[in-house]
Image (cartoon, rainbow, N blue to C red):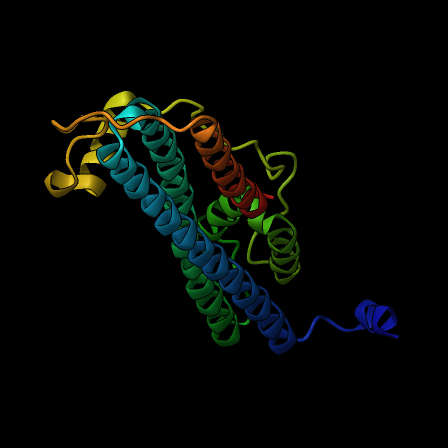
Amino acid sequence: MESIKAVFWKPDPQAQVRKCNQLIRQNTRKLDRDIANLKAVENKTKSLIIAANRRAQRNPAQAKQAAQETRIFARELIRTRKTTQRLITSKAQLNSVAMQVTEAFAVRKIEGSIRASVGIMKDINSLVRLPQLMGTMQELSQELVKAGIIEEMVGDSMPDQLEEDDEEAESEVDKVLGEILQDKMGKVGATPVTSTPVQEPGLEDENDEEAEAMLDQMRGRLEALKS
């Protein structure tokens, strides 16, 4: 029945507005959830860095291992922050799209016609590449094409693989560690002037396994947010 109506009647502008706004709100909520999850991962990573540094101060025999762990955690923290910033930027773009869409429909109501917006098309093209929003943004772009707000995107709308830096600059890692640990925590890997306690057999292996398990868990959360 709806398909038959579409042949004889133009789409209802109010229905188009509601549909577009619904998709925009849906995407905004998704971004808010992902940003909140990333913030939780960031806080957890900070705690792991501080815990590793404290362990090094308590037990100088583990100082080298703890220093390695803090740098690994710092790299993960940098990646998490970059992903968070990317999502925050995407949310700002989405808010811009929402305002431009509202304005476009308002203009059509007054003038009786609508012009394709290059600005909206640029933002949509950027957002549709984001793995977190790929499906719903494609649906939104289709609705905007139907409404005449943007032109159909061919080829260029296909999502690109977001480039990730596998290795963060050492200076950036040092900066993050300095920010988190500060002077009160001491330098990472610094050995206090105390007698060296005897390392219990198997304890170092257990610490290695525990740190690796925590790292795998954080990476899993990040990958889940990217998928």
